[in-house]
Image (cartoon, rainbow, N blue to C red; front, side, top):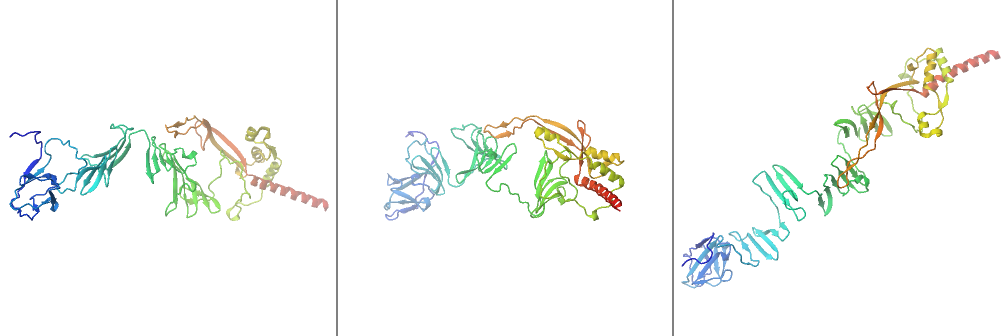
Length: 476
């Protein structure tokens, strides 16, 4: 008779050899000669009657034996066929949550016994669960690739589903990439709280959602794509701990060249500066220090510059000048000519106003008392001496040029974060220590008043001595 229905596409029917089984009305379990994963894989005929899987018989011995619910009588005719593989056409029957067993020993299966949920069991335990909108892995998720790239892509209804949409986690060779194709932010959380954010512009924000952290009272750290680092907190903001040796903890550079350092010298001293010029915070003293050699330096640095001066110095005491005889030579009294110069200078003290003060304050500029350096210089010249040979007189020359700087427009990204800081146009004076093309020569004269007054006081002493001598003569 011809086959009726859809032809078999794949799968096999195997008649099992049961000739060695003894049916005596008491035995219920019989070897199958093979291992079967499910009772449904067997077609069992008992004296010409098809048996129902799970009711009339079950599997035992790990699927290697069949156990009948009723012991076959002596001389019973038992016929068993194993059905393996997919038989017939596509299965379109509703199995209503029944477990679909995949392997021989029956511990790997697919089931949908929970409404709208598919469970994947491997090795006897649930490993994966799928619902209408989620896929859950109980343990590990592994993406394998036969090439150098292995990818996991995450997309939703907002991102789109193209190759340039959503989130891509990619392993390329030994490198790993996490790529948000969308023009949007990436968040990293612990304890359901945002800890780190990379905004769409590439700025990295720690514990804050505000890239303009310096303008707020938030705690956090911001690293901008333009290289700016901002940190804020209620307590100590930055802790730098250099271990073992003395040296730099912060190195400041300009276009790759070192411009200065901040570091430590000893366990409790901080130092800062550049090259031969530095400061050491030495207990209760602020002392000169060489940054290039990380050593103390004596009698080598000046405070200020002839072209870049301090304004006022507020102090409880005046300066202490070295006056130890052991550090001096050519010690002598003023000559007659020097006394003559001092006499001339003693008559040169005047009142005056500084030009810079008048420019700022107008008529309110205050009147000062002192001496004019050019007058002092001339007094020495008039007596045949050179004022520049004396420490009370100073003359400094440099070259300067006014530099104009154009305004810079502020640039922001789409989130309002500053990419380029805006600056107004301005000018400044650039100075050089030697002749430089395009720079104007500038000379400024000065007076060391303590030395000047000492110089003049010797003149006063000479005049008083002369007066006393004359009085003694007249009285005698």
